Length: 313
Ligand code: GDP
Image (tube, rainbow, N blue to C red; front, top):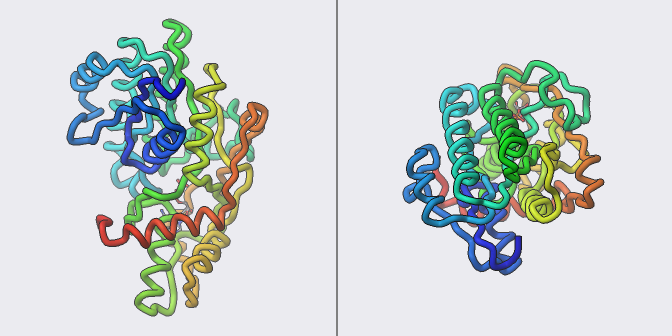
């Protein structure tokens, strides 16, 4: 992949796609291809195939997906499995049919079994039952991984699959119910500060542990691996450290500058107790995350403040 390559970034308005696009633009890529949802519906097989026939992207970053937090995954379970299967099947198959040289697919750490040993290694895939709160999403992502492995074996198609840990950053979804924990807490602490509320409610018990990767670091890893990695094995992309939700809430509180109390609501689901990726393979390939959590939260909070007025929900 070089600066004149025709690169299609699918999902360029989302958290991950926008970060990959920013990264490629900053490196001087001249032939970046993007389509807004109104221009190209990635769940529409014929539309996707027509698009690939006309544009013939040489490289594809498949960052389009239906995503959401613990509550959205159970509320919209059918949408999550259908939309993700359609988007990835259409994208992968059309890329193969129309001569794409290499495709990057993004999974998620939730593809690993609920009780996988921690930290979770790539070989733990399909060794046990999944966490029920996001099983439909995880099953779709596992199908994408297996599809790329099969396309590589049968057709020699070069697809690579990265498994990022929980991501956050500029462009995140800050919806109060449907978002992931980090943007949800940024918004909740900010609004509590603005309206002088005495306490902020955090879902669950505060004891589950999660690993958080700043999305610009993921984009850096994606471009790095597009250039240097070409194998069917999945690659975890994380920071190698996790924090309890309680500690995350305290960090967000401090960044936002809120002075009230934190209260936990154990009637909300905790989800899986721990989700930490083993990043030995990634480190072996020569890449490490750079952005410390407190700095990433501060940058995300700044983005939130700048875009607050235009946010939905
Ligand atoms: P998960 O990693 O798939 O479980 O996704 P989430 O980011 O939605 O949730 C991570 C953890 O944060 C879970 O234990 C949640 O219960 C907890 N959590 C605490 N407050 C919130 C919140 O306001 N929104 C979300 N989504 N999760 C929260």
